[in-house]
Length: 193
Image 1: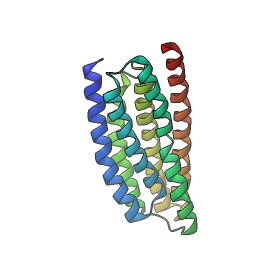
Image 2: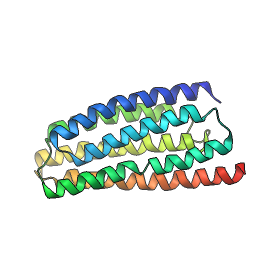
Image 3: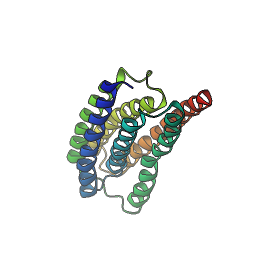
Image 4: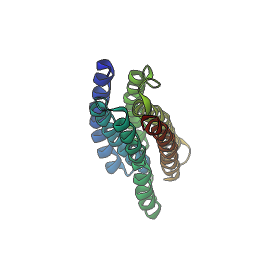
């Protein structure tokens, strides 16, 4: 059990929880499907990192089971997108592009800091730290796409579609990460048994 890693995941959990609040409020105020999906992702990241913080003291078999649960938690942003995307299709008003891009930029800074803290541990801690690293990395890519959607909405195409397309991409990345974490956790569980 690496105390430096435990401290890092606790800091990451708190940072994700704080930015979840920021992004959730902005998403609702400007009507953004991509920000709402990303805010659910921040909440999921906070949960993942808190579980990692506690699970690191458990046995290898218990950690593998928690890794499988993490794979299921990674599906939450996809469900958030489906819900918000459906409502956005019914009322296709574009989100405020400046607030969308600025909030995406803030999220990018948070996620790059989190990915940096986890980069050294992504192969050393098994499925749990791999889940946290993949989540932070995917989130950084998603945030660049959110910023791009804000720019496209402001200057090229004043439509709800750039926001919806980015939200779909965020949902897909989380499905792919969930599959990878599930595979790693299953391998760890077989090895522990």
